[in-house]
Image (cartoon, rainbow, N blue to C red; front, side, top):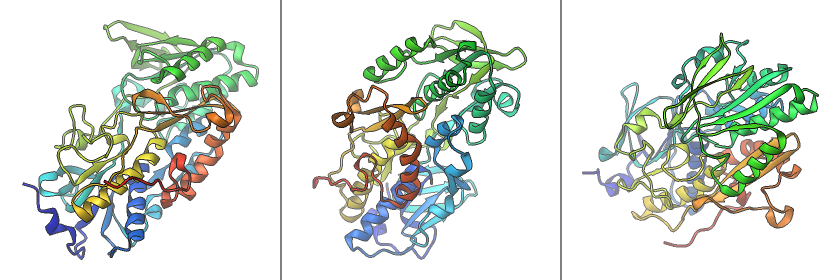
Length: 436
């Protein structure tokens, strides 16, 4: 039986091992949740003790991962898109446990770290992101470590700048860009970097010497039909090859070949001069193997309230959650206010508030230098466009959206979002929610 919430709710936090709110993960989801929960507690006038909120994360750096596409496109320097994690945690108000997670014990309202330390909580937020499985593709780790392999990926801080080096150095040959089958973070990123490379080569007079191919494990260009159709039309117009339902399985750098597999077991090998790889992704093992996970390994939460379906004092957002929407930073900016509202109401009353998440997410699809297709949608893959009434159909690339992605979003993230003052498409206005 769960430890009584009432007994713990106003417990002393003199012990650094117990917290009213324990957040697993200090990435975009974890930092956003911490700041917004803290903000609601402060604005309510309730008594707050330093250490009531804590974050568990052993990372040294906090990265603005959407910016890695910009690094791979030669537009940003990767070290400008990270901050020391400790510098973003509002101490002494929020405690930082610099430890790696080991396991969850929701029946006892506790977690265990790899060092064996037990941390207890009144409410838990699970936001550790997801696992990128570089090792799942045979030969990939070795290829990424080899400067002359022609293989790169924007899905890692260590290799995103190698992507730009490879793109800028290529003079002729075959450029292959991959996307795995299944769930990944920012499902548009695999082709964003392809479109930027295509435009770079066109602008520098190399386009006619380089054949560009998009090889994806998915059945279409994008999950939302409206944007998928526009992207496929763009692919055909630009002469980019498209191979669907082909999942990358191995790389042979000595032969410069990549081997793909189809759902029916067919194996196909393609030659490459440049190969950009997006590895398969999935939940962390400590989430997947926990009582909090659904059958697919994600934290099993209600898609509207973000509250766990079994454990009422557990919440989740971001890439680790089961929310059936695209895993993006934009989605998290919409999820964090909902989670903060419902969690703080739960701590105060034992019942969640009236906040509901509609599945909003956004994928700023770079289609070249100075142009971007701004995909925005909610649950059911239904487009919900913020600027369509002003700038027209967002399936049509526009320069204004490009500068949002390149300049405004990174600025807003580090100057306002990580401080709890940015709410995505709501800008600086905190969303209001109906009473429960």
